Length: 376
Image (cartoon, rainbow, N blue to C red):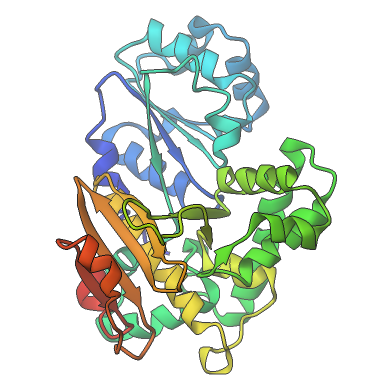
């Protein structure tokens, strides 16, 4: 497949040669290696790409001898350490390299933040900057297809997600790819590295969440259904977030007495993974979860749009005890932008309770017909 420019690249390049190690994190198979090779071709030399899963590279980095590494890279000014999370105590070695070779620009990639960041945060405090790469966004996809094709592509994304490998794949190939990917990235990233023995509980937890996207989730109820304690469920959820399988939205609450403040919603970084977990790839006209799929899609697209543009925002949903709700809220510099997600029917009523209290907030209804003009 021809290379598709990633929007995140603009933000990454801004930090080149500012005395920072750059981490590119994200789920497996979202194109991190493709992106760093592209960056090397533009700003460095492809011979300075190092795969940390190779035994000789891994052993050299685990030696914690920056001068041996300097002998390997020579006079290079720009290097990539791909799959850096596979190196034990990678943070300590990166600190040594950074301190002994301050003019060297290092990019390190990793597919799980609890493998890479938790092994590197302490020694790299103030020396590193993180970027999160997602599957393709609609904006990125739009560079390769027409607007007419893009509308059809949205429906495909709701069923099969937007992993780069699936860009031009048929339905059967996509199903096989997603089922294999889901198994690998659950069991390899979460179970193998965290030595979790109850793999059936992790899988069942994800399936329960898959059926509740767009709905408030009760941790206590999840624990009861799984037959495990609440603390274990919280730990599993935390691991799944750090492995970039799911993410959570918290409830927005500032002033109103009847606002829900402790509930959470969980969404999937990729809908293909979500659908694979519950074996539901049916066409949209045969489904009863299109509204939930659309909400998950819009939430992740808006978050990607914010991250790729370098904007710092907080994200929430809002609901009252009486059931009045807003699907999604962006907060930046004290300004609120609220969203309602409707697949087809644009008719909706603004919750007066919210806008009477937060008077300057914007209100946007996002349907599939609005998607091109708004998200692109």
